[in-house]
Image (cartoon, rainbow, N blue to C red):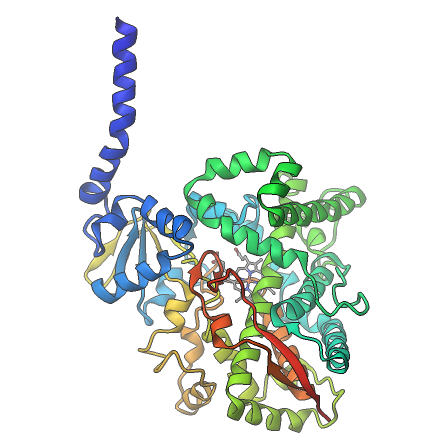
Length: 509
Ligand code: HEM
């Protein structure tokens, strides 16, 4: 009798728990009084529904919420989205401001011990510190000859593509370049996607792996158990369910192998990192790191994240800039005229410091970074202390964020945001304004992109080389191929692609 009463009580409370949770979230939660539709604050399964069942559509709901309720809206029970250009930097705080990461968002990358998934602010700083010299401007300058050599390899491949009239998928070609650069940078050994002879398809398994991870992101966010089960499935079954996930595992295995080699040859803490470390693993084995931070799992996670962060992002931005320049021939003409001043001959490879001083090229890079719907995630930060915003006091424990594209398309600071107009950067500089402080593409604060120097160098060198050497033309492509209609961690077009294709019309010079 007692047992059945207990069982009944258990079942009833199990059934009532979600109902109680919804009532609590809507009426009693510390974020209950923030603007937004009641259903967004009631349960995160609404977001799950729009992202999983409707194929990455919650971002549209968030845009609509901002249009209706204003700059601050509650987009899920624990999270506020704030779209206010001037307030953006306060969301993420200064480099030293304390900002944590909540557990759900930390799951998104599937690499729990990596710097990007680290929950606690201090712990994050500890993990980020040995990587800082590794990604410093000086380190990237040292790498420049290698980056130029890979860019030139891409140029050679495109010359060959011209002869054969081949069709190139932009994101794959640029992805081969960025994979080769990041693998050399991180591991001291390039994956060599560009070096393999006549393959003009630029096949790149790792790009597909990252896309696969991105599609799983809403499941990781809302149904972690499903992901945990998937991780335990045998390879043959995974191969049937989602072959691209197999590639995620392959990349992880490759990172593990590389990490293991370094671990076997370096005694813990013995590595002298006073000079630039040779590989990220040497940096991670710095004597300043406590032993529990120098594990194989951590090095695998970090290697995986750095590889993934370094290839998909930059290749997509290069694809975007290529598309915008092909669509805006007046901008392309201005760019070419400027490039000629520092690259008089076709094979010239000026240092990045020279290219960075070209006003129009700099504006092209900045506008390419602004005109984007690449990251659709909101990069939320968990507040450690309350934060004032207008009449609101956002309580500690709340997650706050703003998807980069929402900030980059804010008409208050970027008028006519939908127009690709590099000139806006030049005009702002002439007025003495620093538009760059509003650019959200690399996020801000102590967790902002670590690879920003490398990313800029890759973009300057590649854009200069490609448009100085080639006349390109679209093949069945246009703006629609870089316009997000499905928002996962990354944005995708309707057919789950980022598929601008081009052909080399002329080799210049
Ligand atoms: C155009 C290219 C790139 C863009 C737009 C970009 C953007 C971003 C963004 C938005 C974040 C912040 C993530 C967060 O707040 O949670 C981030 C973090 C990071 N990025 Fe990049 N990234 C780019 C290229 C690179 C490259 C080339 C690398 C080099 C390997 C890199 C390495 C990283 C790492 C390691 C983090 C984690 C930083 C941390 O948690 O402290 N990124 N990136």
